[in-house]
Length: 164
Ligand code: SME
Image 1: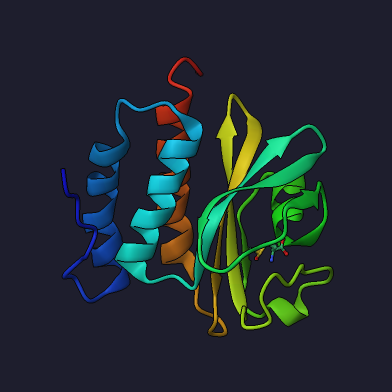
Image 2 (image 1 turned 45 degrees about the vertical axis):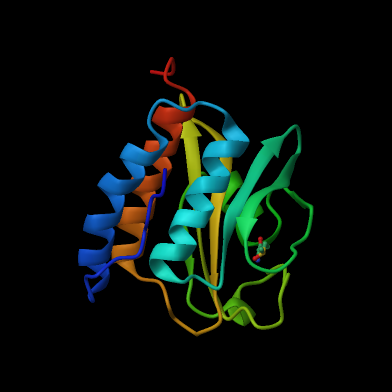
């Protein structure tokens, strides 16, 4: 089995439009959390070339590093801390055009310049976050937010099919 996530569309919306059905098909029917998150991170990296893309998963009072693509990252983030912990605490997507302007930003790489963090919700509760970093300023916009929130919903439905 070989699945390619190399996309031909040149505009961002077109790339997401091709990517979403490919990802849905690729992860459907698998509910092993680590496996699905690992393949989703790999697919996002292959399709969009993100500098860092991965997951932090809720374990008690912490977000704990999960599957990712990119350089080594910090293991644990407290609720309310950094961009990831704030997105968890506020249960909403955070778009950060310039990480240096975000109070308390946690720098896992000094090359990271902008970031988007999307919570993954199951039955109204945040179970983890999708975190994507760019080495360019202002690299994420409403197109990313809209489509990455679809990725988050797809993951929640795939991993927790019994949830409402
Ligand atoms: N920048 C994040 C930490 C995780 S790394 O970007 C991989 C934050 O402030 O929560």
